[in-house]
Image 1 (tube, helix red, strand yellow):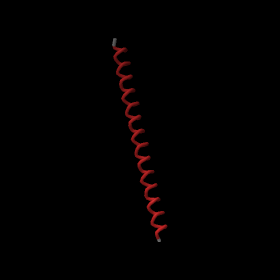
Image 2: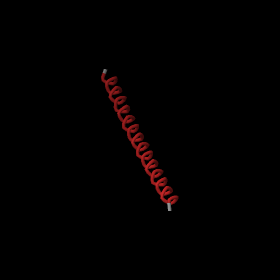
Image 3: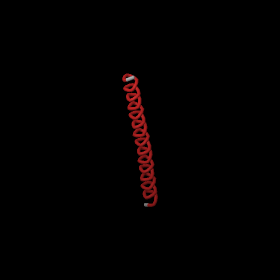
Image 4: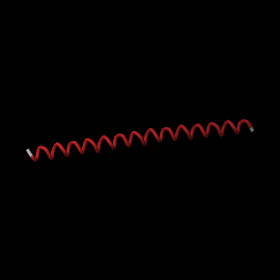
Length: 53
């Protein structure tokens, strides 16, 4: 019984760790995409200003 309990607890902790890694990775990807979009916007604005001059 004791071994079963520790096994269940270990599985539970592994699940929590995997879930947190998943959310962190998803957050990093979302942040990177937003940064890329912002950078693209800045480049477009700079190109527009160069065209005007």
